[in-house]
Length: 433
Image (cartoon, rainbow, N blue to C red; front, side, top):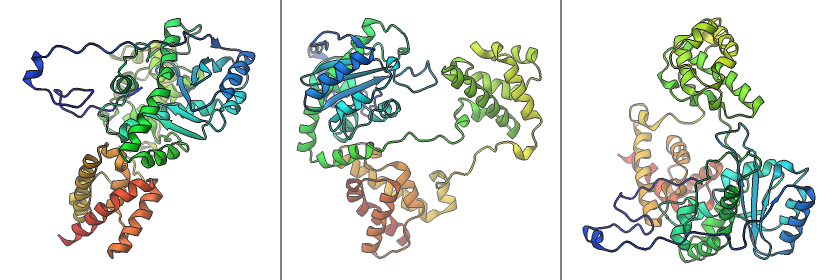
């Protein structure tokens, strides 16, 4: 589970955020938090349709929200599929389900119908759960709740230690969950991830109510129900080191090799970097070797698939050599959004003043309400609005138009309510200068 960057000073206590002093050095060290352990022991893995029906009966007969987590094989497999699904519900205990062995998970979806799901970092798990037919009708995201509450770090282990006072084992977070059979220590780690979610939710619900942020959280969680992973356009441009390439033909070579590697990885269900590292693609695109021997002797060209798929790489490079210049990719394609704000001062000085004023206001509002600025308003929404604000300058009409424009981007009502006044001020103020 990912942590957000801890922006506090290195001398701040990670649990309380309280700055330490030299006097703290003389205080005795606090006893470490107790290690979290399974209350009911480690359950057997459900890997048959009959076993799934038993799990569904128990979960359907219980009541209250359901803690859910999924383990994937990121870094090992090309796909984002779930290789283990963990569930816990008061009165039903913990269940570990192996979706790979199941004919269908439809009975599980039916058993959970109408219940609130508790997830941590829901955007990570919702896609792979949806792929196996599991979709919530309502949810509570403990990571997002932690952000709204202003916790400086919102990884599950950190929140559990801060809020519940217990430590979690996290040594198997990067494991290859496609492994079969799964080791018992891995299964215990997986079961512990849902062991704490019910209690963590209870604490956070209370905190959100006290902070006046319960409605914010409800809107955010409702918004997550429609979450879809962003479709990456020109994903090959994310190749590490591609920015060092010079010329359109070198970029074309990187693109061709990336696409060839991606096709192999998809077919074999192996993460692309295990076939050929990004660094090897960049080296080959720079040198442009003309045959297998020259390719394999290129310094820095290595990887499990370097030799095995050498003919594929050579053919990709040959196709690029034969392309006309206008067929090759350019350095930076024009996106559908505004240009980078660093160029605004020269291109559109008024827009630059709007943006800088609005950004400062967002930082102040975020600090006032104790939440990350990116959760107050998505940075891309701010850039788009400040680059192309509504045409009217009548304050009331402008405020209404700003709210509508933010809503069209996907901003939630609570966000628009908090930021509209400041954004209207930034728009009007920049044009008076």
